Length: 220
Ligand SMILES: [Fe+2]
Ligand SMILES: [Fe+2]
Image (cartoon, rainbow, N blue to C red; front, side, top):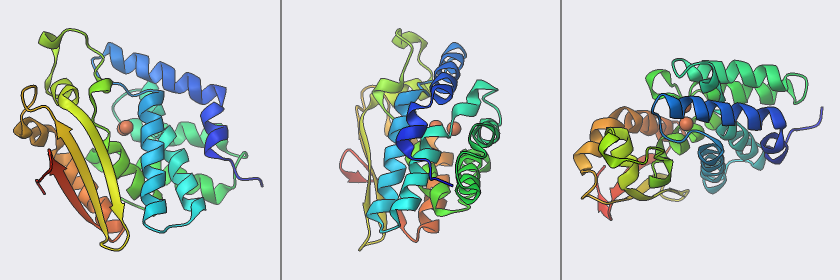
């Protein structure tokens, strides 16, 4: 069976619809952006992590696919959305891509959420790190800053967030640029502790050490 590419998945009309509806539903219940922008960033970050660490192009392509599709289950419900995403992806792509690839993708998707994530394969580890690293001002949907919750505040304060993988040093460095007038570094840690723990475990799965730099200072 022919392999499905990330590009084909991204252009799939059902995928577009799922992402769009999931994003609109989450916006209604007060969440930050979870649509095609988040999907695109997670897909590319996950793919780059694996490529930079020397994993195969095939694995990196599956990481891009899993990264792009990881949150589409939010259209069902935010709770257990990782598992809903995995089931939807199985339903959409069963018979359209090699079953072994599909299994790796749904395992990665079903394990991406920090509440019940286990880096079960390299794809899942890359998606966990890429997902948790996507903190950015552009994800805040609310217009009025007086209605911001802590998630909005931390995202709004984040001007830049990037993951740098170093194959020689075996490090994965998350670099954040935060406007500390909008959110304090403590705010960041308050909501990101669980995510950092999940990311550290995922980095260890890739035989790397997770490092965190905030405004140029080593925080972890
Ligand atoms: Fe998610
Ligand atoms: Fe996500």
